Structure formats: structure tokens, C-alpha cells
Image (tube, rainbow, N blue to C red; front, top):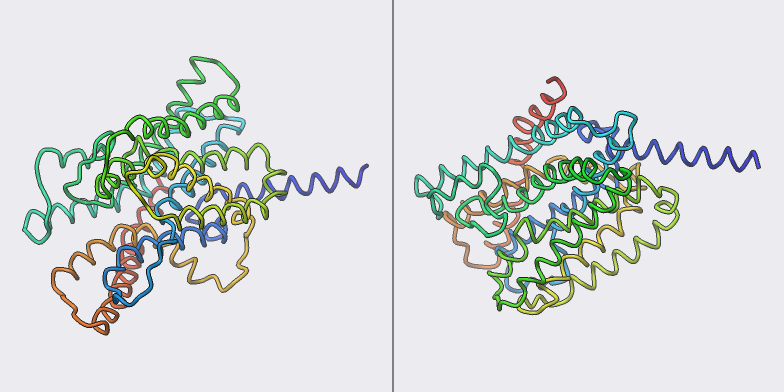
Length: 380
């Protein structure tokens, strides 16, 4: 019996150390989980590949089975950021207004500098006529992340839609937790679970409510895929993973291989299905099932702490992924404006040149702009 208790204690201590590493300071090399770096690197590779695919020759095989990289980002963000909040809630201090202020400061030092840098770049490009877009009073919505809350405002800085979804999660989840805890005076654990269910159900019900209207692919993209109110459940599934990881760590570890297989298979099946935007499934359950499949893969990926394969490329892409996400479209827009490749060789060459430019520019932005702001938050 004593041996069993010692082994159980060791497992719990090991799980606790992994939780601290998972939900710790992501800017510290030792705090990064390699499996999650792989997921983040795959997410940005998928996003940039989709954006650069117009340069591939027509003979290049179609790959309809590739998942949406943004969905991977959403689930991963819910898992990591939600895990930080849950860990704070479970601490002796609990989630106080002071700790919430520290949390938001750290998040905003991580996300806002790059966001506003590229927002101003886009505004200048449109103002001087170097980029097609519309400048009017609705541009102000971009400064407070309201460009796609309930209706799409698709005038400029098009990739900002996903950042708006994440920013509203950062702000709404802890505030709703405070309000719910003070109104209903339930246990923090029960309040957390209720909020997670809220994040999973409300966006789905909203999509069901607006699904009666016929849509084409562009309208589906704007009104179902890119609204805050329709996509918070994707982050919610990552948040659910953080909840299970925090409160049911033993089961999380025990079934990680099974859930990995199920999640990967589910993601492949859903991704291979032809997108028919006017069908009920793709307006409603498509997003939920995709995020659920990705969340099932988290236990296994989160257990890969050390590099099991040559990891430097994944670590590198993971670190510059945010800058890559923001800078790839401006570079591609410039390429479309100045270059008009004709043959397969020219297209293929320009495809690899674009990738090289995107990676180099992302590294420069990360090194000279993003990383200094991330370090600054630790000193303030």
C-alpha cells in the first residue's frame, strides 16, 4: 500500500510540474511544451500555405483534406490561456482583480503591439492607394476589436478577425467568472464548468438561429466563420481541455493515445468533406466538431515535453507564428501587385520566394519588435 501511495504521489507531482510548464511563461524556453510547439507550427504552416496556394501550378494536386490552421490556433489558445486562468483560480490567492490586471497586461503586451503595428501599416497602404480597401468611420471598430462582433466589417486588415475573437475571450471569460461567482456564490469549479458550457453552446445556438438564410461561400466565410459570436466555441473547446487537464489529470494522461487517434481521425474526416456553405452542417456543427477533434489531440501533444524529432524548425516557426500570421498577407498582396507570373516555373519560383520573404520578415518583426515588448511586460 505504501509503495502504491509513493507511486501515485510521484505521478501527481510529475503532472503538476507539467501543468506549471504548460501554463507557465510561454516566453521562457524551458516552459514550452514541444508537442504544443508542433501544433502551433502546423497551424501557421497551414495558414500560410492556403494563402500562398494561388502561386502553385494548376498541375499541383488539390488538398481539400487540410484543416483550417486558424481552428488549431483557437483551440490551442483556449487551452493555454484558459489554463493560466484556471491555475490562478485554483491557487491560494484565487482570481482577484489584481491578478486579472496582471493577466490582461501580459496578454496585451503579447498581442497588441503587433496588432496595432499592422493595423497602421494597412491604413497607410490604403490611404496612399497602394492597397484596395475602404477608409471610413467604421475603421474605428478595428481599434476596439468590434470589426466582427455581430456583423462583419470587411474593409481593411482582413486577418484581424481571428485576433478579435481571441481578445474578446481574454476579456470576457474572467469577467464572466467574477460576475457569476458573485451572483450565484457557487464553487469556483462549478462556475468554471458552467461558463465553459456557455461558451460551447451559445455560439452553436447562434449559428443555428441564423442558418435559415441561404449563403454563398463568401457570405459563409464572413457571417459564420469570422464573427466573434459564432466562433468563441472553438476557443471554448480548448478551455474545456484545460479544465479536464486541471481537475482530471490522471484520466487526461491515461487516455491520451486513444483520444489522439480519435481526434486525428475526426479532423481528417471533417476536413475531407467538401465544404458546401449552404448546408445546415457547415453553418452549424462543422466548427464545433472540428474544434472538438483538435481538443482530443491535446492530451497526447501536451505529453510530448521533450523533442522526439529534430525540433528546431518547429520551435522556430512556433516562436514567429504570430508575426507570420500578420505579415504574410501584406507580402502576398505586394507580390500580386508587382508580379504576374505566367508559366509553372515562374509560379513555383515565386511561391518559394514568398515563403522565404514571409519567414525572414516574420523573424525580423519577432526579434526587433514583438520579443522586446514581450520582455518589457516582465519588467513593468
